Length: 65
Image 1 (spheres, one colour):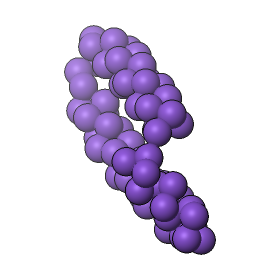
Image 2 (cartoon, one colour):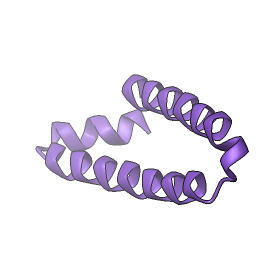
Image 3 (cartoon, rainbow, N blue to C red):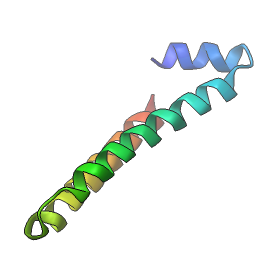
């Protein structure tokens, strides 16, 4: 993954990489929002906390790629 990202930036296609990452994150977060919205009230905070933790971990992985 990181070699592909490096090559895109090296060949002046960083904007393509950025848009692709943004689109992917946006799509994923929309799915997470739908999942969280469908959660029963008594489990909402637990599910929201889990989703937030997963999001933080994913963003760290994207950052370090």
